[in-house]
Length: 201
Image (tube, rainbow, N blue to C red):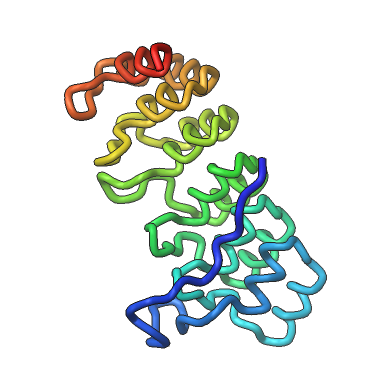
C-alpha cells in the first residue's frame, strides 16, 4: 500500500518552542527516517542530531519511519531516545501510524518500548487505525496487548464500526472472535447498520 509522506504545513504558531523540540521544516532526520535510509540516520544520530525534532505539523522522525514501515529506522530512533508516544497535529502517535501501515514489526518495537495501547477517550486509537487499514494481524496484536475494543471515536465510532464501514471482513472476524460488542452504537447506528449500508451502496 502506498502512503503519501505528510509535508510540513503552514502553522499559526510559527517557529515557537514545542514540547518535544522546535517547530521547523522537515529535517534531515525526518527525511532519512521517511525514506528508510538507516545508515544515514545512524550517522545523523551519532553526530548529535535530535531524534525528537518536530515539523510544523508536529510530526516527528519516528512518525515518519512508522508511516512507511521502516523497522530498522524505528529501532534506531527508539534506541536513541525518540518519544514513543509523541502526538502529531492530528493527535496520532507512532503506534497509530504503524498500525495504519500494517507494519507488525514496527508495532512490536513500539510496544516493547512502552507505547500506549489505549489513548485518551474519544480519540482514534491504534486499534481503530489497524481496522481502518484492514490490518488484521495488527488488530489481533492490539487486542492481545489490551486494546479497548469499545474505544469510541466521536466521528468513527468503535473499531468494529470502522472495520464494517471499510468492509474489512477479516478484521471484523478478529474483533467478533475477541468479543467485540456488536450492539455498540454510533449516533444510534450499530456496526451492522454500517455493514448493511456498504452492501447497498
